[in-house]
Amino acid sequence: MSDKIIPGEKHFTASVWIVAKTNPKKILLVHHKKLGKWLQPGGHVEQFENPLEAAIREVREETGLDISFLSKEAQDIDSESSMLPLPTFLLEQKVSSYQDQPEHFHIDINYVLEVAEQPLKHQIEESHGIGWFSKDEALNLPIHGDTRVILQQLL
Image 1: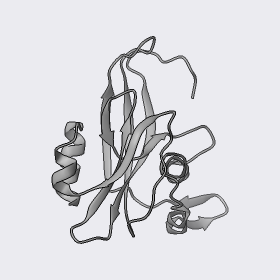
Image 2 (image 1 turned 120 degrees about the vertical axis):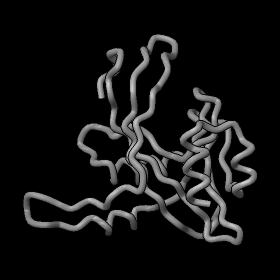
Image 3 (image 1 turned 120 degrees about the horizontal axis):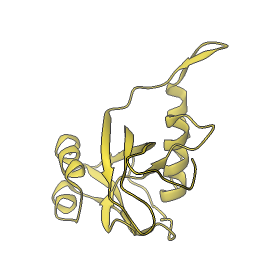
Image 4 (image 1 turned 90 degrees about the vertical axis):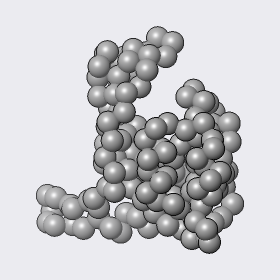
């Protein structure tokens, strides 16, 4: 991805809604420094990555969790193609202008994954915090409208 963003440009991103197998269920959210909101781990699909690879990398970088087992869901068809797992959600999100970056859009490819609740670490360069949250706790955090809708479906 180029550092120079053109107004209205669309970038592919990949993210993962990680649900803890607890009773009640909990969701993993990170507090994004730039946005000041809590959201699922994820980020830009980099050059030479597919969305699944980007999702696995972003989750590892932002949370310390290893979800590389998700790559087993990709199926080689032949030497020229693979079938990637279908995302659960596909969103187009407007990214407001910020400092020298103009308004642009993210096409966010969202996977959903259930794991055991486990210790987390956060990427201090990009987030203020990280945690597992119940539905009520998550809905009371500063979150985006799409996050609210998805949390209602997942929890």
